[in-house]
Amino acid sequence: MTSGGSADIVPTDIVLADWGTSNLRLWAMDAAGHICAEHRSDKGMGQLDRNGFAPELGRCLAAMAVPADTPVLICGMAGAAQGWHEAPYLDAPCELSAIGDGAVRVEHDGRDIRILPGIAQRDRTAPDVMRGEETILYGLARTSQGDATICLPGTHAKWARLSGGYLTGFRTMMTGEMFALLGEASILRHTVGTSDWSDADFAAAVAEAHEAPADCLGTLFGLRAGPLLFGNAAASGSARLSGLLIGAEIATGMAGSDAPLCLVATGGMADRYATALTTLGIDFDMADAEDAVRNGLFALAARIWPERELLETDA
Amino acid sequence: MTSGGSADIVPTDIVLADWGTSNLRLWAMDAAGHICAEHRSDKGMGQLDRNGFAPELGRCLAAMAVPADTPVLICGMAGAAQGWHEAPYLDAPCELSAIGDGAVRVEHDGRDIRILPGIAQRDRTAPDVMRGEETILYGLARTSQGDATICLPGTHAKWARLSGGYLTGFRTMMTGEMFALLGEASILRHTVGTSDWSDADFAAAVAEAHEAPADCLGTLFGLRAGPLLFGNAAASGSARLSGLLIGAEIATGMAGSDAPLCLVATGGMADRYATALTTLGIDFDMADAEDAVRNGLFALAARIWPERELLETDA
Image (cartoon, rainbow over the protein chains, first blue to last red):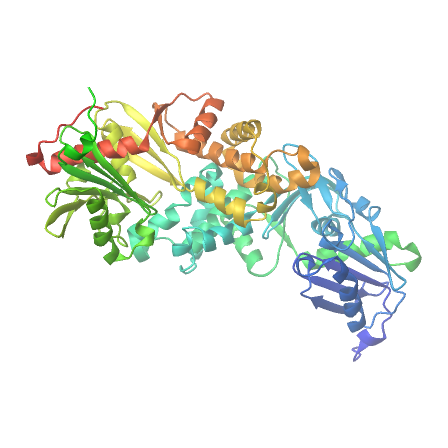
C-alpha cells in the first residue's frame, strides 16, 4: 500500500533541528515519530551573526510548510555564547536526559522555540566541552543499560563513556583538524598532499601508532623523509598520516575501558575508522549520527512538550 | 696587549659557512682557529634559486675582504637537491668524520669551494634526514669518547645518539612547527595566541606530558575548553601548548637511553628547554650551536685541506 505525496497530508507535530558550525538540518515530524519533511541549509553558526538565526529558521520552516504553531527543538552551536541564544552548559558527569531540562526558550513570531544546552566537563586536568554531540549520545543511550564507549570521529572527535543513560566523562581529540593542518600547512604537505591512498599503509600505521601512541609526534617527520629516501617505494603519506593519528586516537580513547564500543559515523569517515578498528581486532557496533540525533531530539521533545503526545519508540 | 684593527691584518686561511634554509653565516678564520671576520646574510636556501648561491657567496666574501684564493667550506641546505649543488647524504649509522669525505667540490671564480653532505637514516620504520646538524654534532663529538644524547631544539628538533664520534641514530620531531601551526592556525589560536606566558603552567604541562606522552593528542583540546570554562583562571594557553609538546618530545627523545644529555640551543629556546629538563630532574650540559658548527667546520677543513696547516684545537 503506497500513497503518493503522503508527506503533504501528515500533520507536523514537532520540528527538530541540529544547528552546527557549518550547517543546519531540520526534520518535521509527526507524533508517531515519522519524518514528514526534511530540510538542509549551509547556514551554520559560522556563517551567521546573532541576528541571522531567526530569519534563517523562518526561511527553512516556510520551505517545509510547517504550521505557525508547531514548536521547534534545536541542538548544537545555535546555543553557544557566540550563537543565537546561549544555553549554558550542563556539567558532566550527568544524566543525559537532563539536557531537556536545560533548554532555553526563544520566542520568534509567537512560535515556541527551545535550544538545548551543551555539556561541560569542568575538570581542571581534562576540561572539555560539547554542543550537539550530547543529543546524539542521548539518542543512542536513552534505552540502553550497560556501559559503553562511544566514538564520534570528526574534525574534533569526541570519545564518551556512558553507563546506561549516564555520561561519566568525555574527551575531544583534534584528529581531523591535525590531519588537515599537517597535510596542508606543514612541511609534510609536500609528500602528504600528493600521495595516493594505500589501505595497507593505513592499516600498518594504525597498528604502529596504537602500539606506541607516545611515539606519534616522533614518527610524523618520517612522512617527509621517507619519500626523500625511498621515492615512489615509500609508504603513502596521506594514508600513513591518517593511520598514525587515528591509531593514536583509538589507543587514547579506549585506554582503561573494556566497555563495548559504538562507532557513530557515516561515509568515508565510517569506512576509515571501521578499517582501523578491524585492523586492531577491536569489536564495535556502528550507528548513524543523523538517526541518533533525530531520535535524541524527538525523545527530548516528548519530555518538553507532553501535551503534544509524541510517541517515543525504542528505535 | 691589545692592538686596534687586528682583524684587518690577520691573514684569512679558510672561510667556513653554515648555509641554512633561512640564513647564511660565514666566518673567516686564521690557521690557529681565530675568527678574523664574521658575516651574516638572510639569503637562505628558501630565498634563493640555484643560480643565486654563487653571487650571494661572492657578495659576502667581498664584504669580508677575503682573498681570492681562500677556500670555502659550507654545510647545510646549500647541499640539498633543491640547493646550490647536491651533496648526496651519507648513511647513518656512521662516523661523523666521514662527512668530510663526502664533500662535493664547486668551482666559482677559480675558488675552491666544498659543500658537505647531510646524513640520511634509511630505516623504513624511522626514515630521517639532517643537513647542517651533522656538522654541529661533529663539532661537539670529535673529541669525546663516551655515549651521549644530543638535543637540538627548533622548528624540526633533532635528537641524536652518539658513541664518541659515531652517530648511532637520530630522530626529528616537529615540535616547533607543531607549536606554530596549532597556536596560529588551529582552533587553539583563539586561546593560545592571546594568552600570557606562565612559567608555572609551562612546568606543569611539561611534567604532565612527560609522564603520559601518549595522551598529548588528547589533552590539546583542553587548551580551548579551559578558558571557555575557567576564564582568566585557566592555565596559560601558550605556556601549556609549549609544555605539552616539549614534555612529550623529551619523553620520546630520551626513551631507552641513560647517556648524558647535551642541549644545543641559544636564547629563549635554550631557556625553555633548560627549564623543562630541570623541571623533570634531568641532568644536562649545554652547548652553543654556533660555536659547535664552526668548530666542526674548522676540524673538517683541516682534513680536507691539509696543506693549509689548520691547527685543530680541542676547544
